[in-house]
Amino acid sequence: MRNYKKFLLLVVLTMTLSACGNAAKRKVVIVGSEPQSSQDNTGNTEEKNAEPSRGDTADQAEELAALSYDAAPLEPEVNDDPKQLLGIDTKALEALLGKPSLVRKESPAVIWQYNAENCVLDLVLYDSVTSYVEARDEQVRPMANRKCLRRLLLSKQ
Image 1 (tube, rainbow, N blue to C red):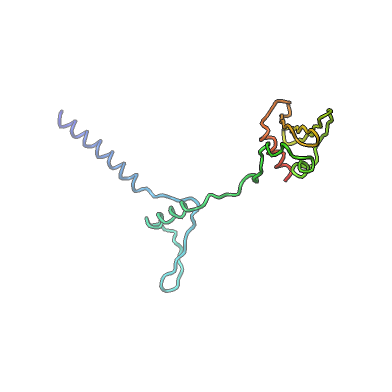
Image 2: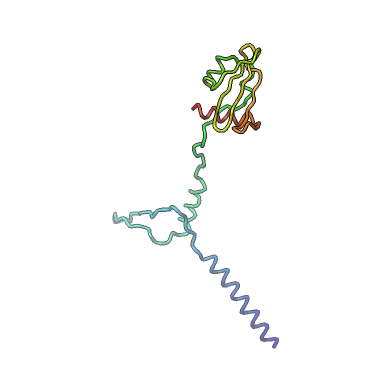
C-alpha cells in the first residue's frame, strides 16, 4: 500500500512538471505583425511565414515597447480657468467668447449669458467689467464654472 502511494505521488508530480514544461514551449504571437521578406545571397526573396525565432520575437517586443503613445488629443487644449474672465472689459470678453446669447440689464448690473452644450454661463458685469461668473446645467442646477466654460470655448473652435 505504501509503494502504491509513492507511485501515485510520482505520477502526479510528473504530470504537473510536464504541464509546466508545455506552457513554457508555447509560442508568443504578436498581433498585427506582418511576414517579413529576406534575401539570400542568390538574390531570391522568400517570405518568412515560418515561426519566428526567439530573437525575432524579442526584437518585435522591443519595437512594440518603444512605440510612442503620443496620440492626438481628443480635445484641443483651452484655458478653461473661469478666473480669467474676472476683471476684463466687454471687448476682451467678446474677443474670448464671442457675442452673448442674451444680454439682460438689471441696473446697475448687466448680465451676459452664453449657452454651450448642456450648460448656461452667466457673466455679471458692473461698469462694463466682469465681476461674477456662474454656471448651471439645462435643469437650472448649479455646475462647475470650469466645466461649462470649457464646453463653451470648445464650441467656439
